[in-house]
Image 1 (cartoon, one colour):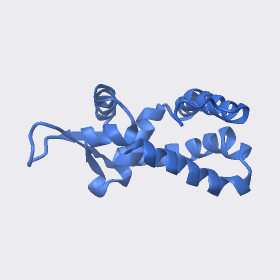
Image 2 (cartoon, helix red, strand yellow; image 1 turned 90 degrees about the vertical axis):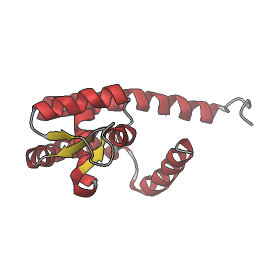
Image 3 (tube, helix red, strand yellow; image 1 turned 180 degrees about the vertical axis):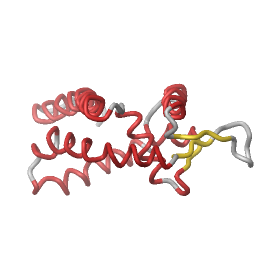
Image 4 (tube, one colour; image 1 turned 135 degrees about the vertical axis):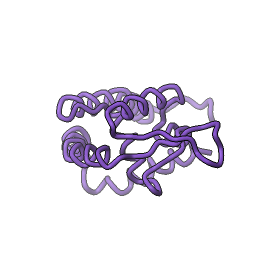
Length: 150
């Protein structure tokens, strides 16, 4: 099955998906930087921290959730720390790693940026997908994500 060529519609879908995967992060990043000064990576890190218990995560877990390499997440967390939006600490149970903690100022920055990301997401994607397709597409894409995580 893996070596069966894609039919024309599958090929069209695959190529469109590849373009979306390349173009969308750049477009969202450009919109966020222009409107808020935050990069998309910084926004995603703040978002994941805001959703975590006690608003903190091990940096390695944060890298995984954010789909960033360990070296990239370290640079992003360091940049956010310099701005006072994140604190880093050594966990008591394991001094080998570090934990990133969202500060109140960082949470405020995330809240202020959210409307701009929402606007960008609507303008760049949601306004171009029919309402009747949202739920089935979400189901399909979640299935792909779950398979990729196996």
